[in-house]
Image (tube, rainbow, N blue to C red; front, side, top):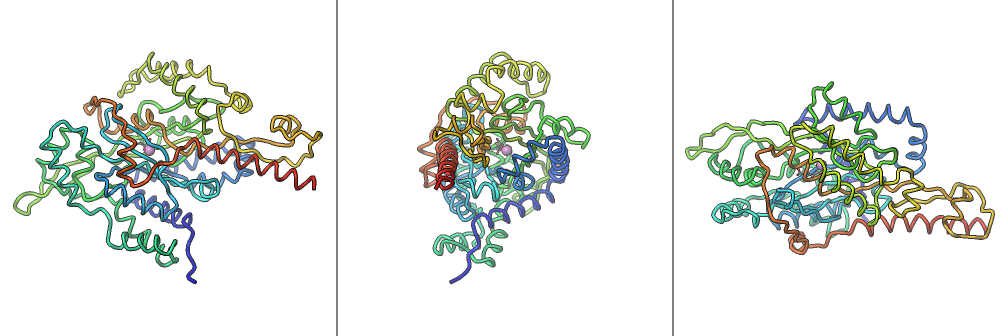
Length: 459
Ligand code: OOG
Ligand code: NI
């Protein structure tokens, strides 16, 4: 029987290949990676406890290799095929994000590994959006855009064949896995030749910059890659020294002792030269902005109760100060955010007892002093310890902020809120996983492993 390569190994290889390609295409991403590596090393040097816990929970090694990316697709067929391609790499759709309310005509999911083991091996994720032409008012333009999209092929024949082969055989050999990575990478590559002429590009662009980005090119170029940092405030502060101009504010929760969910910041998209085909086989030069860089800091995954509190506090602070795109009120915004989040407990113990976050439990090695197997008793006796479960997903308000910072201020547009998860799942050809169920499962499994460990000690 043929030896198959694990899906985690294919995912790691793909993430590495994508990073190398992007570093080559967008040098500022390479600079950001160097900065993040420096800050992460310094943070670990200064925080021995953090280093011990990350090592003990088998979470240290993944961090330097960790990143997410994002793409924007044009049709249901592209989305459905992308799902099959990512499945070969052990990446599955988790969560549904409606961004229409934020003025961006897309809805999205995140393809990512699921389950503790796969996440520890390599947590590579891709935030994947599907353009919603139904939100475009101009019917003529809508139809033309749909026709252009229907004609393009974003996957190579090799990528499709190897995906089918992997599905049929439930895996790929090492040789096929290498080919698969190279073929699939082609879909994410930047094309500096637009597939539409300049006048069509401008019509699409006038409807919404994002529509031009999706419809005008041969494929869904990767638009950013995001390394994970252990101290986002420090990276944000150091960026100018590295000649990178960060966006005005960090998205997500404020600076805290116990990091929750996800904090993100990005640098502005580059203006890149592109050429548009003319009627006579000639080319017209122009430019397009789409590709940028981002960094993220990940904290604990919150329960529905914790997430409810987060959403409430974020909303309250944004009612006081709405961050302006030009950064003119960023200090006021930060102060309002910090003030609102005073109501969110900031010790792991308090977060746990209030039922706000998910934790992974493990045995310390100490023997229990009573027969109680209640988790709280075991913790107070020092038999069981707990570590935060990392939040692996995204946040719609933050994602909208990242989108907006790269669309320019003139792109602010209003769409009526119209989440349509059923439609998205029909286009995807699958349902998306509920993130809360997944985190609850990780927590539950860790508790069961503790209890099983104790009963085998007792036997
Ligand atoms: C995706 C923006 C969302 C994030 O990290 O929240 C995102 C895009 O611009 O296509 O990547
Ligand atoms: Ni991102």
